[in-house]
Amino acid sequence: MATATASTLVDPHALRLDDARALLEHGGDSARLPRPGDSPTAYLQAVIDALCELSLKDPLTGLANRRHFRAVLERAIDVVARSGESALLLMLDIDHFKKINDTYGHLAGDQVLQAMAKCLTGCVRPMDTVARYGGEEFAVVMPNCQVSFGETVAERIRRAIESLDISVTPSVHVKITASIGGAYAPEWVRSTSNLWTERADVQLYRAKSEGRNRVFIDQQPVVAVSAEEKNLLFGHLALGEPAWIESLTGDATVGNPGSSLPGKFQ
Amino acid sequence: MSEVPSSPVAPAAATAAASVPLKPLGKVVAVTSGKGGVGKTFVSANLAAALAKHGLKVLVLDADLGLANLDVVLNLYPKVTLHDVFTGKAKLADAIIKAPGGFSVLLAGSGMVEYSRLTPEVRDDFLRIMNGLVPHYDVVLLDTGAGISDVVLFAVSLASEVLVVATPEPTSLTDAYATIKVLVGQQKRQTLRLIVNQTARLGDGRAITTQLQQVVDRFVATEPGRPIRLVHMGDIPADPMVRQAVMRRQLLMQTTPGCPAGLAISQLAIKLQETVLPKT
Image (cartoon, rainbow over all chains, first blue to last red; front, side):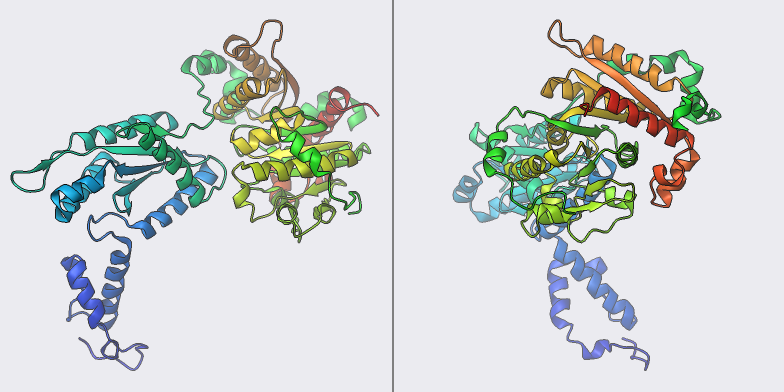
């Protein structure tokens, strides 16, 4: 390690970094470990980066942990509030997970959780966030997910989980199912992560109580304007009626409608 | 400030009104749009100023609880807001402030996050406040949020008249149409009034209203003998003075009331008085 210069505010030698290093060596991914040859700044930066990463990950599955999940939700709310883009939150729970633990042992249970994590990650887009919410509960945050797609996406995930064949030992294969509840962030308003999670949770509870291995999505007052309606709405556009086209492109010179107003308003 | 008595509104009124369906309150006009950014708040504030010029006592209520921005448009920084009234920290009368255009405003203020979802408590608080306000004004304009969330629909449900603001853009028209569809379906509205903002030419607004009316007639089912009527209230022409006023955070009706958009708003105010507001 390079010696600290007078201008260095913190001397890495004086810091007790052994615990942090040990933590990273056990839990982190070794490629990103701070190396002793690094400059003091680079070394500290590497330690901090690795700790940050560690603090956001679920150690068993490598998914986002609850802390990270919270931050992602808050971010999604910010976007939805201003852009009106719809965002979907799915809460998933493995059905009868306790039975797996009790029958095959906790190591098998861990393998099931890991398989579930891998399956979920494979089902969603790179921009989505899959998190382990706790125990056998998982969550998926999907920004920019159209309302009409929610059911399809959740159903695809449910089927993928159902078709998993998890070998916990060479001879023992475990099949699982999951219940899924979903809710969209209310568009154009700033919701809270608690309220949003709560609504998805209510749907998850419904899925559980109605027999498990099923999907329920919170229905917002969705008004779909059909292609036919849109066609009629923009009939003028298709016909290329000049006033419309110009008003849309902004090419039109703004007339002076004021001139047509009765004089008493002047 | 002393327009509203500080005595609390009879709680009985609030609880009675909380049961669905709500009876819309007279003189309450909702300004809504479906799409955001089409000029709802601009229209609300300037229309209020125009109505105030005619001697009406006007209140604009920032009903966009989640993302209120009437304060931004009017360049006001109130110490007491609707939030404080909701939480019981302040009296209703103290939250009402005079806006530059000669009308009163009740601003939602930040910290309304927890009100962005319509819980029974929010509903009751809102109703209690509305019931307390309405008797003291000739008109109460509700500047609602964008979209058709439950908070927006609830705010609109309190109004006897609805002004839908749209621009000639396809996205805005689609959202305005969706709003109309919901209001007809859920609130059994028969008459909806359209204001077309940022038009390029005379006659655009009327053409758009006709177009919307055709789609409504064809696709929005109603009971026989109860047709839905879209009333074209007027156009606000695209006008560089609007942008200037907005950027300076001033009311167009104060800076350049004689510009095309200003004149159009004056005309809108007159039409509103003639058609909607009870004659005094």
